[in-house]
Length: 591
Image: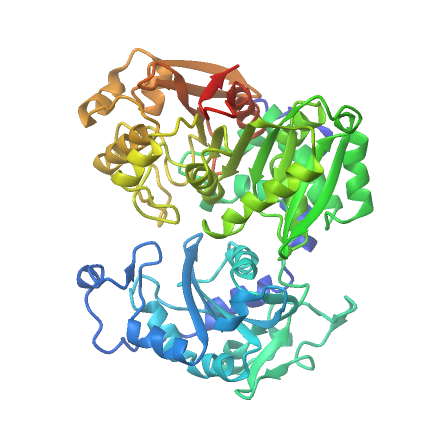
């Protein structure tokens, strides 16, 4: 690293530059997390964790027991219960059951920050008990959604913002009427105006007295503050994930990224996130026009999707273009999300602007809901005659990478090849997109080229696969920690990709491989190479399938946390563009 390597956009790495764009209620949320007393009363009849995990109503991902008698009692009152988890934080939805069939009708939204022990599998049941009056208000008034964000510790990483953005996808909460429960402040005998660092603003954006703005919501008289337009972040997702320790493992060097060509290219995208707040902004659309892209907003069934088309393609619709689907949030929960998507996958947009492909951006927060993409593709077929439907690729990062592979698995006739970023080389029969042995065998019947890319300093320790995960930050141990579990997960991946099976001993033997890429990733591939690009080494391993084709590739990038990079996007495109799918036989064609 040369600490003197610099570029005009380097200032966008400075956290101070983004201070005014951080969620305005962040100081209030963290204060409540630090001062809310935790209810220590156990759930009556609670079983020890080992026994609770054996219950049919136990969910591993959220470490949550959802007792049928409790859930059914609320359902009889017309209340929908749902438990979820993200970023080490668990959360619940309680909303009118009938509202889920009509996302066009929005309901006022209350979010509750709750200091709950999420290591206790009865955390959700305890939360419903502690906030019974709130849930009764949902049942009685039928015009309210409540999101309980159970942190277990103060939310110093602003995870609540990401959770709310997802919550508005799962339930029809009104982003124009959002309230924050402030009862911890009142219970502590404090005024809202006394919270350090917290500045409240009125509807016009001017500073206002939060104590005068205090409201009592519903007949339960819940003390709330209207935080519409103040809970969102308008920061850079890339800057946050590359800079914050919770997204990386021990030994990660942020300064190496900043003082590199990779850092420069990432900062180029950050400029968009800093300058624009909405994808509907005419100036934002004009920015892409100057690059040579027609950037358009679309809505289907109250769900938003985006497209980016090389302008020259409009003049030559007979010349077919491959379509790259980017599964990244562009929904209406936070207008800044769609701007962030263009920054996060800036290299894909640069590739499209050069005329290589068309982009379509869409994702929801549930594998079943993502099936709406089938209808979106039908809409795109009508609107964009230049799309080459034999070359439709799909890509996503982290949980969206799982959704990308899941969609391709469900609809192999529509998708030609897949790119996932930040996901394990292995697959598991758990999580948001479980892949069990039987389903893996069924998936193997459909040839689906896949490139799996990730950082060597991911918080989940993706590589090497030939040993136990090593280097986790405190409290960040990943699901695939033991070598035995990693080996089984990799074997499941081999099954899905119709590749020759490898034993655990063969995977472990890669520790002594003479091929540096294979040794570094810990994957018993058939060929491997190391390349240097934009300041870092990238380790590439290819695995041959049972048909003798190289349709499975793994890439690990040196010193990279849980974030996609420009070079990873370039390498993914280099892989994806090799393939087409025969429209008649549905078999893969190597171009």
